[in-house]
Image (cartoon, rainbow, N blue to C red; front, side, top):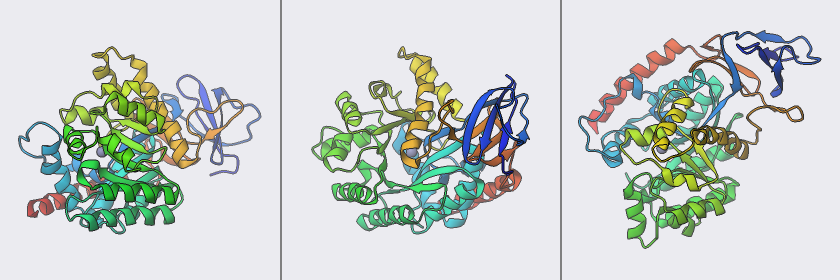
Length: 407
Ligand SMILES: [Zn+2]
């Protein structure tokens, strides 16, 4: 990078972004006032925008589009997909296939204009060190990330859950630059109250939050009720598992009272419209009662605008404004600001933003800067080669298929 930074643009509207160091200082027509000489990144047929935030995803699933075998004629609903695909795939992962999967997912995100990901990871056969593999994929390609391991007891009980929590703690205490850790739980229905309490305590101790799936499927709601709680979020709150700022993915089956509690407890809810539709789950219309809602892809590839489009299409049947989905995408900047300590979004004349800026030609990024570092230039990754990342992902998919067949 030159000492004076970059001028991104002019874009197809004639606008330019001026980036100095890790700050996005100015956005407007023509050249920035008083800007010194800076390297120019041309994008005459693109639109300059702030980078997008994916508030809930699974980078470990990055090899899926490259040939991982799908269950044949699964029963409808989430649980058959969990037992037929995701819970086999995560058990099949080793550090080598995880690396290829995460790199493919990060490359896909950057090339589609996503500059921050909130990842929820699970690889029960290789828990220790797994978040380093994911962190390396993020750092080496240049995306910002909040990472966690989703503690669960579904394979080998309490020891498995504590190994997951230890992995979260390890990353929180030793995260590389550009990556932040938090505490994760897979979902309430796969852990005991003790694990929920331990997750909440650990998050408070580390000064962070908990990232957890809640009320994605009726099984989570039923499990909480069987344990004597009014619902799954009520259970988490009773176990003090979700400190303020915690991230609750899905929330489809929450009650209105639970959504009100989420707001009161300063939690974030994350809507994942493509994933929910793909699993045949209902539209999460209850989230309209929550103030803090962001958008996630839940592992789906492609641009975050695909989530906006899906949310709009499904929400229109319930009379929701098309602006709601865009508002939720932008809420990701606020959520990322809370967790990563950076001001994302548009700069104002009085306040610069973090230099997470994209020039988009349709769904594809022409240039991407993250923290002032160019990570996509002229449609190509700067710190990786798309063809070799894809070819490694295909090899990982084949290896995962063989490992899943042995499970
Ligand atoms: Zn998820």
